[in-house]
Length: 374
Image 1 (cartoon, rainbow, N blue to C red):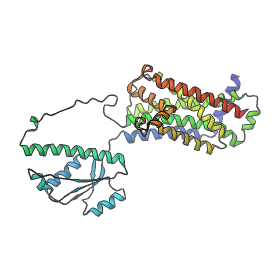
Image 2 (tube, helix red, strand yellow; image 1 turned 45 degrees about the horizontal axis):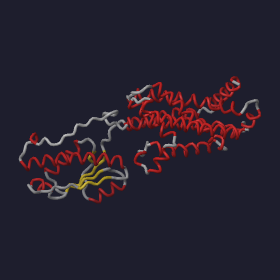
Image 3 (cartoon, rainbow, N blue to C red; image 1 turned 30 degrees about the vertical axis):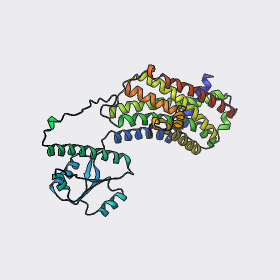
């Protein structure tokens, strides 16, 4: 039995060597995407294009413009001559922010009872950039408002020691977005890699017309399934080891937990996704169909992982459904081990859920695939 399975494994690797574009696309394409995501998210958002329409043209208005430039969040373009120019630039996506300084701004700043105002327009179509711009403008307005209040009252800033919370951030001290997105991207790339390799196994044989030849050979259905599964498991496991190494070297992501525990749980998750991939492979008539099924299943899983939208903010029904998605538990495990240093004493509910889902999915896929091959 072992020799027959080994011969099937060798046959699969020969297929992979001949169709080298597919493993190269999945492995190196996934690594490239991971590096690009890490590079893009590890950098702060700066130099957002901004237009300023200054109706006041005073020292106070120039001070506001200089303060906005000094935040490094904004890149001031040429002064806007009118509001129509701002509207055209916003419609075309040429700017993210526009600031309108009304006439009489300096007078309102100088008056003891004045109420100076700024009109800020944000491009909400790009929500991440708009949120960062709003945060920078709110911080600037708060600081300048406090300074203006102190000047009007004739007080020293040192005399106003109000409520000052002491904030300490755990697990991501710099609040780097890369520490959130890169582990998630890495975990999801493992799912897509295993799903694609498993989904193409029988679909490729059927499309090439060699599946019937394989079935009439002296192999049992169980031996065929094992022989098809081993290459997908090996490729997926090697892929995650390489990706963990890359994110630590290039982006300095910490590995605060046990690497051995993480790899063991990753292997467990690979077997879960392997079962889904084999079912896709059996029901697909062509490799193109298998690819489409993988992306459909993968993007459904993506919705429940919390990668794009936190699961805690979803409606109750969707939060309940997330418990039955293996990728949701895997992503929680991966982040917790890598960033928090968590162990089985904390992760056991997710590990238990992953084991239970793996038994159900694996048992169904094994029964389904064997019945389809027999």
